[in-house]
Image (cartoon, rainbow, N blue to C red; front, side, top):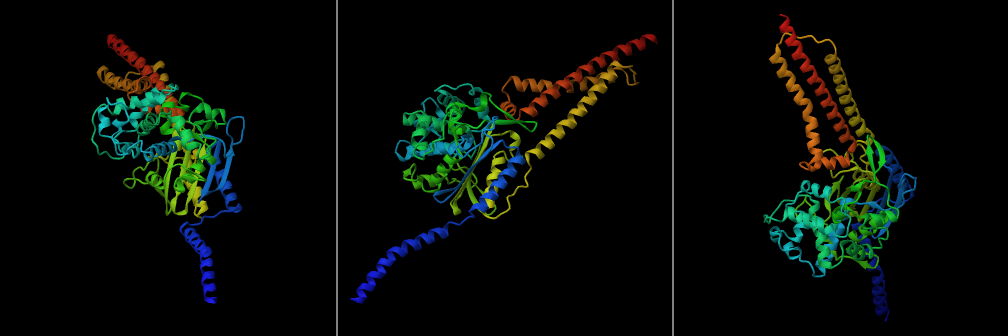
Length: 515
């Protein structure tokens, strides 16, 4: 009897102990990061320091681990009125939105409505021959062969299209550009917004809903993303942070036509808050579940986060390393907004950082996907792991010190040479001994060089031969304006050189007549 009671007691105890043991093993698999008031105070001090170094008007931070949010906070100002940023303030998230588009496609795939390995011709108008050899999976992994630089002209031409058909118009424009000819099936990874614009259009065609409505109903709503929006008007009506650009280092609010491009929404024009993005990362880290809602299966989440070849592109995510930690992440940028989301799988840690200013100068030289918020998000992860923040990268002040210093030196040199040329032109003229033909050859070559810059700038500005010029005009207007002024000044100097040439010819003829 006692033996039976002992066995029963052991079995009952095991029912309690085994789950605890399993839980303990699960906790062992998840590396614990530092938390607590002192760590969060350290984070606050780090964010304040970086906001000052990087001249950020406002910033929003979210830190999550496991299945809970550890820390949410807003810093700085959301707009020129001084409205404070909160964790609920919407920001533009740029290319982070690609993973939301990928999730929408995978939801439809799991519902049996999209075959990832089917040619996209099955879902797009059949006139596109190239659609026969490109699959949905290739669009998701960005191995279609499309290029990013080829999308810039679409970005420029569709910016004013804000109607309900904007996505369709833009997608069909990309189809006309990329799919009219049959292409090879196997293509290397090349990042291109065109892939995700076409995917958003496929979501729209297959679901029978607009892309915006689908995302709101099937992703934002189940994940309780109540401060997330698919259009600029909705976001602005609910407290969107004001986007800023930097002009020679000063933050200036931007309200131009490129702040929102409706036709590019699936590739980079969604709006959300740090709190809402934390919900989204929780689903990404917990097999597609957030609280009692499931937006995607665990296999679907794993597929989203897995690159077909290391160092390429998963489905809205890319892999990388921060010190010794493997991370899954994605930066995002649109005019006046920048963002970075990171997941550290081995720690079940997630970090999101949003800011409301962006110019080309925020990018790291030769690595345009590494921006200011990328550095800050990496610093947050390092602080949580008791590592140096890695804050040795140049601040915006230092970058602009270099840029403005170079601009000042070149401007001063050009002004000096122009003034000197004017004085020499309209002052006493001393004919040298070189003769007419030698003077003409030298001076004509100088004059041509003085006008080349203005001709190139006019050609680039008035045509779309090089669309990247127009993109640079949007993202770094101060430098482009300076270049335009300098080319005008160079042309003015060339005009003075022409006058001087005419005077030299006349003086030479007069001198010959005297003798």
